[in-house]
Image (cartoon, rainbow over all chains, first blue to last red; front, side, top):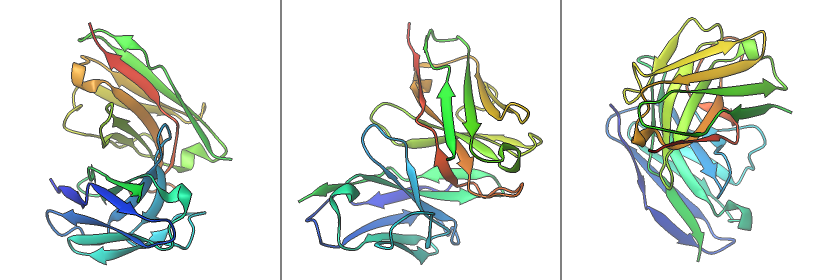
Length: 109
Length: 123
């Protein structure tokens, strides 16, 4: 089973600055990586799928990149509403598998 | 608006059974595969189960295989999760989520989530 490891566990960034969150897969996962945002008391929200495609309604300041085993979620010019928990996910159609990373907490510096 | 509303979460004793429901609206339910995902208190996300648009294919995480059964009723736009032989480690917030692929296909990421229903397994 593919293990997704996110780093850092906590990232402190000032509003207006850029944040870069990392996700490493234990084996190559092609481009089947998604990113979700979760705020306290709320359900996760899909941000990015297929490594770099933004979900409907997601602001352009969110971008995803990567391939193979290394993936990145970048948030340019952080807004107050961006401080939250972020999860990466490897998804596989066959064999059917879904693995989430342990999360990165993005906090205000 | 696309809406998913979970229900059925309660406190149940170890070894007990429970059925979760997810009522959906705002989209063509029978065009979409669906998932259950859970989150233990203070922990991360764990995918639990998948069902294809027509109910013909189902998949489970190893942690619940043989104990949980996913099903759907397209005439009622509803998704279900039958949970048997519950364990302490099944305590979690259970989310119903829509697969990201429309038109009777599946991609295994989730584009819409409900707010969840809480299952507590405790004696």
